[in-house]
Image (cartoon, rainbow, N blue to C red; front, side, top):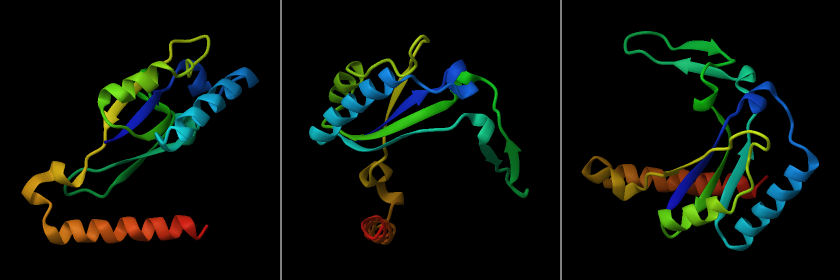
Amino acid sequence: MRVMVIVKASPNSEKGVMPKAEMFEAMGKYNEELVKAGIMLAGDGLHPSSRGKRVLFQDGKKPSVIDGPFAETKELIAGYWMWQVRSMEEALEWARRCPNPMPGEEGVLEIRPVFEADDFGEAFTPELRAQEDRLREELERQQKGK
């Protein structure tokens, strides 16, 4: 199963405070372990929400753009990983081994399963599945071509 591991933002991450070298070293070691174990598919840190935008959709209206920063730091995302694991329990085992992503503050990781094709039932027709497969293959080709 694939899961997204969401690193919740903190007051310091939203201020753009950069981690110290020790944090980069600890996180680099952890990421190496994830990669060697075949768990990590992707992962990145995100700039503070002050550098972000939101696009708000409402039926019958043109989408509108909202500039950051956004309120409620505890609801914001500072980074993420995509992991391939056998179970939620395995994801939890790996998450517990993570260095605190917000040294000096409360760090929070949220783990969410990623929808797979079978999760959508009959609404995800064979034609839609074929389209999805084509798109994933094209994305893989594009990534290899970089």
